[in-house]
Length: 88
Image 1 (cartoon, rainbow, N blue to C red):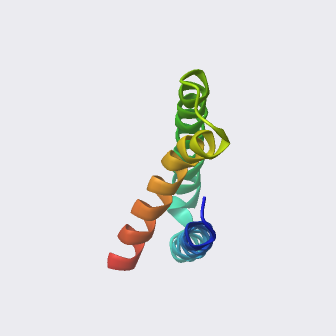
Image 2: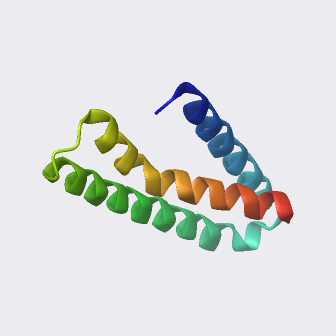
């Protein structure tokens, strides 16, 4: 992962966390349900990343290829969440 992509991912993840936390503060009645959904979303991205990394490893990929495959699902989710939150 190049440094620019890593910095962008870190910035987007922090922004998503901050904006989602603010949303939970504004609607505490829905906070538990929202939090449960956020946790399930992270678990799905982790499992997808682990399986993609395994496929890349079995296909003979080098370390950078395996890392990119492992990080891709999490990066997609963070990017999609950032776009949704910015539009809202």
